[in-house]
Length: 255
Image (cartoon, rainbow, N blue to C red; front, top):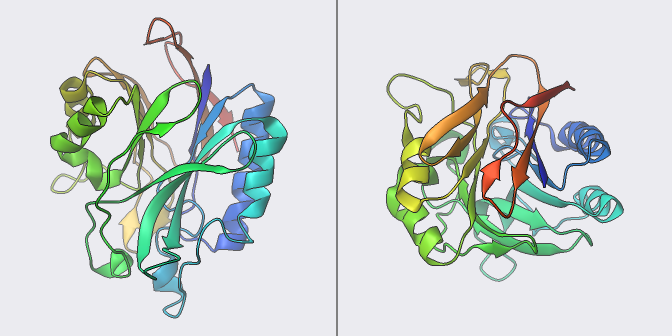
C-alpha cells in the first residue's frame, strides 16, 4: 500500500482556506496512487483557530463544510485520517480529534486527543478517554494525536487491542524543553509496531513549526524524516504482508 503524509502549512487556518489546500493535496496524493492519506493535527480548522476567532465553536462532525473531503475519499476510494475540532452531538463537549474517512466517504471511526494543554490554543478542548483501533479494511490503525504519543501506555494499549500500525497526527516542533524527543521511537519499540507521524510546517506567532518533522519509525528506529519550510506531500510504500517499508526515503511532491 502507498501512504501519503500531508506535511502542510495549516495551523493558522482559516477552515475555508485549509479545505482548499487539503483538497488539492488529497487529489495530488491520490493521483500518485496513495491508499491512505494522513493529515496533521487540527488540519481542518487550523490549530490556532480559536485564537483567531474567540467566538468560534467546533461543529458536530462530519459537518457540511467537511463533505467535500468525504466526497474526495469516496471518489478516489481512499482512507483519510483527518485532524479536526469536533463537538459531541450528545454532550456538547468539544474535542481535538482525528476522524477516519473511509473509501465510501463514511466515518469509519475517530480518536479524541487524550493529553491536552487545557490552555491557550487548546483551552476549548475536552480530554478524550478512549483508545480503540479503527478497522480500515487493510489493517487496524491505532491513532494518537500529538502529545498522546508521549505516554507509552497509550501505544501499548493500542497494541493489546489489535492495532497493526500507529498513526500520529501532530503540531509538534523539536523544541529543547517540550519537543517530542525520542518518544516516537519509544512508542514503536514499546508496542512493537510501525509508527507513521504526520507533522506540519509554517510559522505562527505562538508556535514555529518550520522545523517540525514528519517521520516513519519501524522497530523503534526512525527510518526517514522530513522537515522544511516548504509544504509537501510525503509518499512511501508499505508491505502489508512483511510489515516493512519498501521505501528508503520519502518521495516528496511540492504543494
